[in-house]
Image (tube, rainbow, N blue to C red; front, side, top):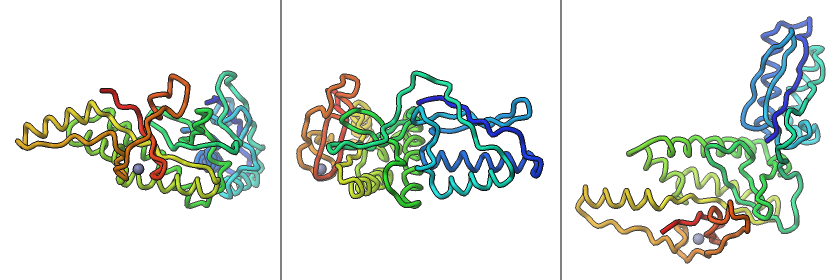
Length: 272
Ligand SMILES: [Zn+2]
């Protein structure tokens, strides 16, 4: 991620600052929804001029060729007031760029977590996020992509911080291939695969340690045997997982470890 500042300048005399503020918010929100800025943004005033601080997916300012219709409308409304063209300034020289092009053998995985601020669409070959705005998509798919990502991150955050029934409910959403969250994510993968002609896998999270803990407590409370899932099988089709790391980098070797090609699922290595 690359920190950046955008200067909106002085409020045009024809409008008041509240309207100027709203127009800048609309422009930034449109960029955010189109993944041309990342995570969030903050507006501020300095010496009578308005600025916004945010994160960029690449070292270049958001490119108009990728603007959504909403972004173009928001920018036009801003400029019609007499406001200056927003000026971007990069404040970071060490961040890495998201990918803006695809190789013929690119394979995707849809993967994110509560600390992630990048695109959730990752190229498995380079283990680098792919900028979602290079993928052709309808407004509806764009909204679903944005909504699924934020929902997944919220659920992952709750899973990390909660306990008891809430923790197990969040875990079920993350780990069950048929949960609403997984169904939405897998539908997005199917869409990405159909428009790019490249395989797109859905990452299915498993935490075996927690699973064993819960099974054990259930057995005690209900006095009945509960079978631990056969983790050698894909939970969607019950065929054996292919077990081999998909990538060489040690940092990710255990993360993308199990795979089922027909179900387009990838799972993490489970210790023990
Ligand atoms: Zn399967």
